[in-house]
Length: 162
Length: 101
Image 1 (cartoon, each protein chain N blue to C red):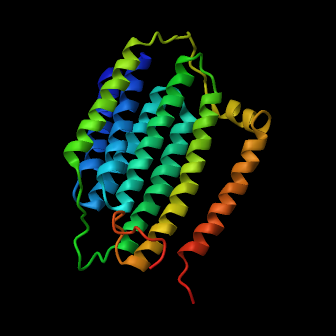
Image 2: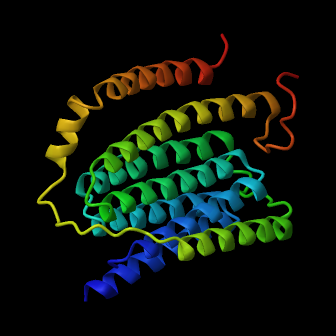
Image 3: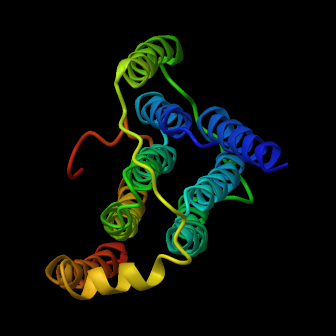
């Protein structure tokens, strides 16, 4: 049963990712991106990363995707012009990407991966919180400053000149 | 589902599709979506290695910082795209070749 669910989510992620890349309509691509993010979040659940799955859903689907949809809205006259765009050099791009993908799969298959035995934790939130407040306190604080800078910078950049 | 390779290959598929979007799409927002796919593939790798490397939570922390940086990146990138749209009336990345007009 759980295997069926797993492969269903894998197939959903891959199909939606293809739709993101190939869809002519930009809004369809954005909605497919939502499904891809959801599929990756489900992969996190299968990898015992409960907190990361929640973060993925909240930040990617709730934040980044809404921002992208706003970007589509603000840069296309939705009522008059159809929201589409052209792809260029699809053939060459496909060859390059296929070569890259083949190389990656080859590398994954020949590498001797170490599979350390591990037991499923009850939850990861407590460990993540402790690590953020001890070992990774400096990156945590720097990230807050970076977010503040990005917030102010984006607001200043996007404002129309008076 | 208990093998590292499945997750790595899934991440490789997402990464390749993201690269494909970045090099073939001409719409700046579609390029941004490709970059999001690439970042997700990297995150999936981090979490997979954390799970199969003895449940090492450090991988989760790294993925968390990647997500934070992705948010900052998308906010600034969309502000720049909106500026390009106001200046060039188009967000085709091939047409916006000059810093000012």
